[in-house]
Length: 290
Image (tube, rainbow, N blue to C red; front, side):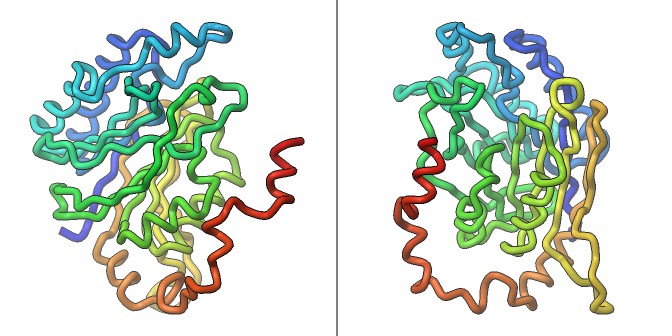
């Protein structure tokens, strides 16, 4: 098959009511499968809807669930039942503290990838208490559309070009991005750029209004059509309303673009980029200290 159907689960959560979130999430996945989706993507930290009650960090930390526990395991079984890959997100319980995590199950219900958010952000949220991830990984996902090279970033990770570039260097054809913030023009522009500059597709799932503002979106990197004319690389963009939205990604066209185009790959000069492996110039540190 040359088409990958990606379900963006732009659905509302019930805060700390994890039983309600589990029920809603299962129903959304079933709806995605009914629409023919090959993979379903949740917004960020679905088990608690990325909720936080101020001045109650202890209770928030207590919401963390185990990767091999009942909440996450329910989606493993569901993926196998539906024959559809599922990328579920949750606050993960771990020995180093809770992590902001995504686990991707393939269409047979097998764990293909678990990723923890690398770039945790401490503003207005308890992410300062999170244990950050320390690596970006890409896997060959067994989907109904055939094997697809898939990686993941989570929300704030998209602010850093290096994250998507590392995934691209590992061969990612599709980057999954669970999200929990307003998706406005500048953030949407980031995703468009990440797709174009790395010759891969990017799919983001966000919470609907009024929790956030929706605009779950998929971009591909194909900047020019067969006639050489510039094209809009936005494959799909939802509005603000709650829904299960299925975007159709042309894998054949994506792979042909990756094969013949030179953007980002053929003319790279890694020897000139050594500065990127350091902590960065002092001016950037100063900006963060102010």
